Image (cartoon, rainbow, N blue to C red):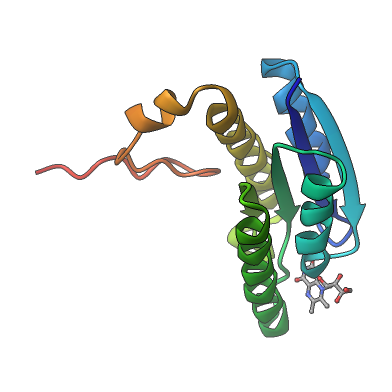
Length: 154
Ligand SMILES: Cc1nc2c(=O)[nH]c(=O)nc-2n(C[C@H](O)[C@H](O)[C@H](O)CO)c1C
């Protein structure tokens, strides 16, 4: 049975790990390994350990960069670490970051954190089980969270 790794953070203001696991379990039967770390810069090694030590076939790295300038720098550093971990392990780590200032208020932020997490959980399922579905969606302007952008009209 395939294993999906879930890494999330205590810094985030919404339980993204719970939303991801709920969405995955609604759709497929897989093993899930979850780890929670303090913040997004701790996600790369957590994801790498899920792959190398826990045998995960793919990992979701879930986090919320804060609204301050240093948080944005932190998010960039975390992203670079996640890309490096993917290259070191030859395994997808799907980064799901929701910046704290993407929502106009707390309600919208919670909505966005839930939706983006769930939509990326569905992408993870497609990557593992239905890669042809992603090919069908190529160029369709998919977005996770708010409305899709849609394809260009010519
Ligand atoms: C400045 C900063 N900003 C964020 C953030 O926006 N989101 C987040 O999840 N974590 C942040 N952290 C914490 C670091 O990611 C990390 O947890 C600590 O540096 C300990 O390694 C830090 C230090």
